[in-house]
Image (cartoon, rainbow, N blue to C red; front, side, top):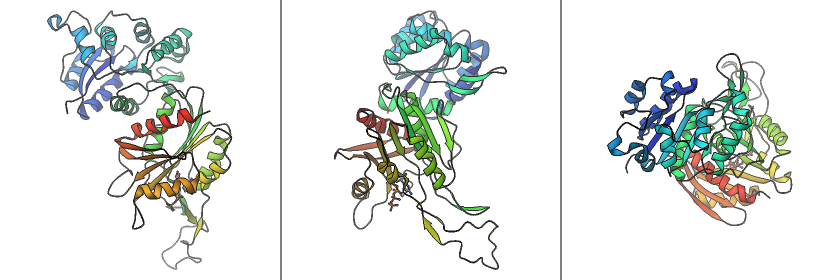
Length: 405
Ligand code: CTP
């Protein structure tokens, strides 16, 4: 397979320095990257950095490499264009079809998916001119990420930060895998996603936990947010993952805390996705002092009590029209394979959709990719081919969106 050809546009904002990390991520994943900075971007990061990291020449204007008509060819040949950071000025020029440098010319000739990752001060982002430009670009099929909130240059904070390069890279890979844009079909919808594993304390220093990294749930939250949804992510214990841009994150520890947080967030939600690995059991009694080796504590700290089944409760209490999605990690056994157990679980849990992952042998847990089947209560079964967790997430939302009344 030939390496995907990515054009990385870099506009002139302070976040331009983060584009070097993004570039690194692309090249390390085997992509062939041509960096197209604007002249202003080179005020922040030197061309030598981009040339060294990409192994390709860097120009800003259309009068370099004229015999190969680079300003037309680069866009035509690209599999993906990512502009990070996209400043207010760059978004304005792109929205209005300007072609006054190599980057904007390439944007006009590209027919592949285009991803803009904006970064600017909050006032500039919220200005109606910028919002109109963003809406125009989105209406033409470009993916314009919502910026992250947080500390901006100087003393101010608010929406306008460049989303984490890891997040941009994940969504960029998703566009390459899908080969098309992400629809904004969750605009105006509220969705709740649970992620990660729960931890059931045994004593002040020990807990019963599991190997869930939270990556699948985070990918579900990220992809939903970038499809326009207002997202609440109820996160248990996870690997070290950055908060997804423009997502409300509620942190929980135990299954009971996750249960409370999910019911609270479910009250006004259109869709609920339980991708968390919830502990089925907890120690029946919480020992408040550290359990000692000798003498062994009594009663036995490993006597377990059963936790509530949050998914089953959410199904039982759902509002009319609310779509509920569950996950099932199955190994298969003597009575049937993973898919067989998934079908039984879908009926038992009563949810609208169930994602069945075959686990074991290093599959699904603590890894970047995922595969499985998507089973629907109406009997539809869709195979989810091997791909990124963001791709699986996007297939789940592809199925949820038309089911929202
Ligand atoms: N789940 C839940 N509450 C629990 C256990 C699981 O909400 N106490 C949810 C998970 O988030 C997942 C689905 O139920 O969406 C299936 O989880 P899984 O562990 O596969 O199923 P269990 O019901 O625990 O059944 P078993 O472990 O016996 O296969």
